Length: 276
Image (cartoon, rainbow, N blue to C red; front, side):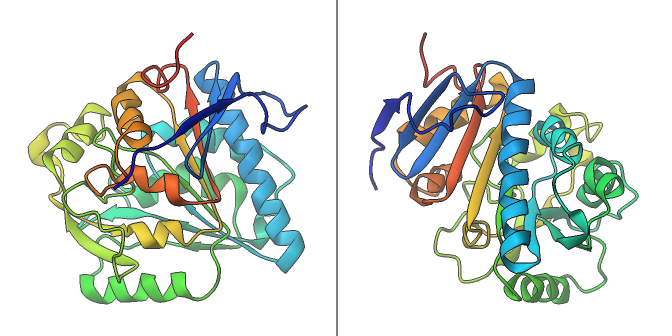
């Protein structure tokens, strides 16, 4: 357990980058960038993501990226898909979770989300989907894990849940030393209520109780982690992640141990950790 040292600085943000963050600081190994509004946050994160992908393609001829599929990521994905400097034909795309038993046509399916928000727009060279309705779930876990192990993951673009989760690693199941890269988990009620609140399901009873998720070690294997976290409803989770102990009780706190992680906030999501 440890408390984070929040070192506020105005250096370390690349000069001339547009839009520029209005505040930058570090908490342990984690870089934090605060933007004036959600639109600027989305563009700032998209510029960084595009740079990582472009550099990976230049260095190795191919890039591999994991995306979160959530309401908080919509503006970011729109901004990223609109950037022309990425050769998407040389990019392999993964996503980090999916509901157990849900078909890709369901409005709440993360496969559908990614297809509509990114894949159809940019046509990546490869798209690896977690099949929520696979007939043998444990085989699906092993299949997706094998794909992830094939090569380095260059970039992971993720959000933070209202309960501090990363992917579907809720506080009750998150394991910073998990031996697996993919697993099936029971969803906490707080996570299921968030899905209702975001409009993906009509009521709590409609939300699946189980899901596939990439584990914390699977996410952290990526060379670069970009956490895209707008909105006031995430402020409490952000504050716990930055000022509390690094502990699975707040899964997002693990970001503070990753030397290649950057947290993108707006004034609303940063409200409890940034003043003035």
